[in-house]
Amino acid sequence: MMASLLTFAQETPVPLTSTEQWVINTFFYVIALVTVVAALKMVTTNNVVHAALYLLIVLAAVAAVYIILGAEFAAATQVLVYIGAIMVLLLFGVMLTRAKIGSEDDLNYDQRWLGGLVSVVLFAVMGYSLWEGFGETKLDPTFQPQRTGEVAESIFTQYIVPFEAVSVLLLAALIGAVVVARRD
Amino acid sequence: MTALFATDFFWETWPWWADTIFRLIFAIVAVLLPAGATVYLYLFKMVSFMQSRLGPMEAGPYGSMQLLAEVGKNLQKEDIFPARADRTVFAMAPYVVLLSTFLLAVVIPFGPEATFIDLDTGVYFALAVSSVSVIGILMAGWASASKYSLLGGLRAAGQLIAYELPLILAVVGVVIQAGTLNLQDIVTAQNQQEIFGWGAIGNPFILTQMLGFIIFLIAVQAELTQVPFDMPIAESELVSGYMTEYSGFRFLMFFIAEFATANIFAFLGATLFLGGWSVPPFLTDLLGIAWDSPIMNLVGPFVMLTKMLLLTFIFYWVRFTYPRFREDQLQKFAWKVLIPLSLMNIAITAVFKVVF
Image (cartoon, rainbow over all chains, first blue to last red; front, side, top):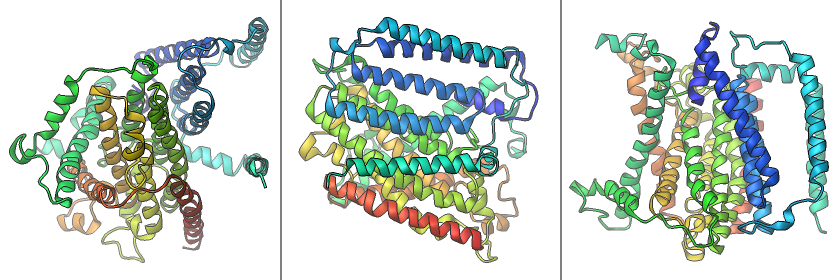
């Protein structure tokens, strides 16, 4: 299904037919449902590894949304960085230290109402700003997937200074991690 | 017959959903058929000859049906779950590993139009989805509720993280030289570039990226957890690592994923370093056809298959020749030898790219 979405999005810039738009919308709703359910399960499950795996589903679903929006590069980066690196390290760490099979009762935190309140407020703020900003905007029916070359060009011309700043920040974090981890 | 070789193919008039089904079926064939071929040729026969024995001889002429017998055997076996296992995660793990294999196969081009998806991010996408298999291995290792499995899973994860870096960095040299991430464009670049004005064989990047190619092969061997990098499934220590507790068709799925992934990485290596589906320009000039004429859609897959068999031959040759690395040697080799070498390769390639 990913194949079909990508191939028909890559062809010449004819507007998407209503069937194609319907397919894209259906896929979006399915993916959104999966994301929400997985996110809820992640915070309610009683097992650390299960929580990590649900988080993985959320991240993969976000990558799928990127693909629907034609942002291939962002999707591949999402998979490489979040799934391939961060989640692997997280699972690796959890399994090295504590990873019982079955449910653990002390995983639930008492202040779940406070947590719920915070997430409702966050949802309201983000939802309001998105609605205000893009509420009436419709996706261009002739939209094309973003070419990777364009991404590269914008990074190395328009956004070169923030890009270099982030690189230096990451390098500093890397060196910091080495310094903290060294014993001698 | 002429209609077949014309530029507009019969599938171009299909609706997109038929096109998708067509591509899906071909993706399954492209994954499973070479996997069966290499398992019979190399795992059953070549290793037997290397060890002065005949290998399977009973099933079919010259043992050629042995694979079907093995598949039938595994499908009949009982689907066993260990008593204390986490059943859902245990059941899901082989699917995740196989998913990574299929996603990897999707970007490989087999001809000028014979692609599953012509992704702009080709190489990047391939390397990204190849890391998904680690998740499946960790899931299998944890959910089995067995010490051997957990240790095997952890070793596999540590190894795959360590060797992913040289794999990616080795490919960067090719990307710099071709100036694109798109696999189809990398094939074009290798066919159309010239070596100091001599274009008879194009410019397969194995010539200029020899170091990158060797690092790529070593890193792939480690990514596949094959000997000499098979600490995660070391029989003498861990029974069979993360897949110790698996039997029946779930074991079969791990087995297929292992060998299919080897083939897909060989396809990827052939595309990046050996010129992909294209044949040397002097051959197409001799025949008087364009290098990307539509007939290459039919010849291309066979060219790819040949190059794949060549590379997998090297994988299995090494696999059945060398003893195993120790865990610390294995990690040191990745971080202290391969990564500095591949960074050097990138620097040299970048300098040459700017100078020439």
